[in-house]
Picture 1: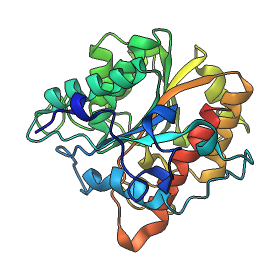
Picture 2 (picture 1 turned 180 degrees about the vertical axis):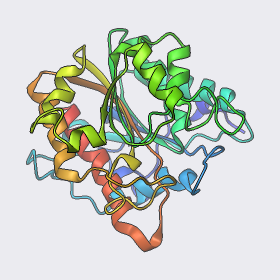
Picture 3 (picture 1 turned 30 degrees about the horizontal axis):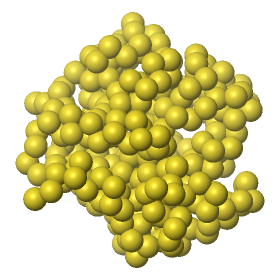
Picture 4 (picture 1 turned 180 degrees about the horizontal axis):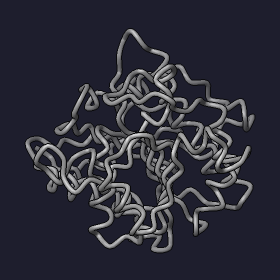
Length: 307
């Protein structure tokens, strides 16, 4: 069997690529953007199905219009988007999976590509964050989530979806450069870890009660300490009313328009999105709108990244 490096220049055809892009816009050499699928699912704790998330997003993207209605342009034709074959993690442990994924992401960064990583459970995000840190040592991390994911271990493993940000800290990332938004479920030890290590947290309850003002989105942007920003986006950040298709839904989440305002504030502040991942989608055929939302989110974030 070919390893990933042997086939990394191959891309998926229009029938199975992101946005169903025709040639030459979906070809590797013509693309500034690559979509990398990491369908890893080993530690989900409530509902399953995240391994189907990347394929679900790609399939739903076939119904996303090429022209974005905020930017009035067809970014996919301007810069090209290549969709790589999904990674195969086999029976690898969490630690082995992260090593494989970090190597794959780093290879694409070094090739000059803007990398979008699709999960899978949130465990995978440690790898692209660290791969991007190697290229952008001064970057900040903007973490959208209902959960802080700062546990030292969960269900007997340190490589759990509930622990990925703690593993980022273990790797030496400066946690005062992490801004979390939407948090509304965490244990006391996570709260204390975040407080002691300087993580900036925008709790959902505090946002709703006006602690950060009417334009709390601007506060999120200005709290990011550097201009280069990597984004990790767990879709359970959204309210279950618009995003039921996730394993650990939490009430009092966020809606589309108020979320897009965060990205507008990033742009206004001159922040540069250097890469991102979208994780924790569990596609449900009875809630196709949620899978479509995730696909639309990926394309909208790309538009902001290349604004």
